[in-house]
Image (cartoon, rainbow, N blue to C red; front, side, top):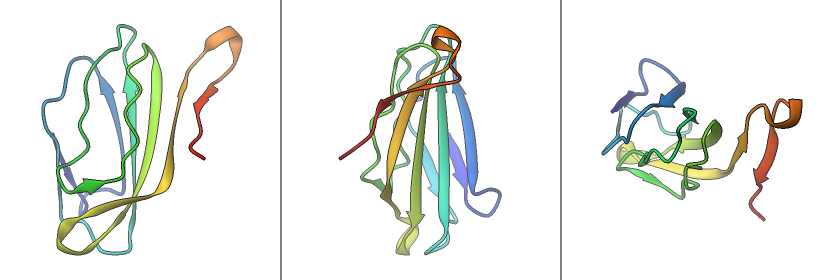
Length: 104
C-alpha cells in the first residue's frame, strides 16, 4: 500500500484483509500526516506502518475499531510518531466511540 505525501496529508483506510506492507513516499519534513485505520466487521486484519515510520501505535485488530496515528515528516522520508496514537471501537452501546487506549 503506497501513501504519497504530495497527494494527501490524511489517509483513511478500511481494512477488509491483511496489508502485508506499506510505503510512505514524498513526505515533507515538519509536516503532520494522519493515518486513520478502520477494521471491518470481521477485524483481526494486520496493518504495518510504512517502512520509514517509527514509534507508531499498534493497530487495534478488534472488529469495527478505529486507530488514529499522527506522524511528523522527518528527513530522508522518515515519519516520526511523536503525537500519541489512539484507537476506539465505533458504535458500542449507542456511543459514537469509546476510548480504548490512551498512552501515558
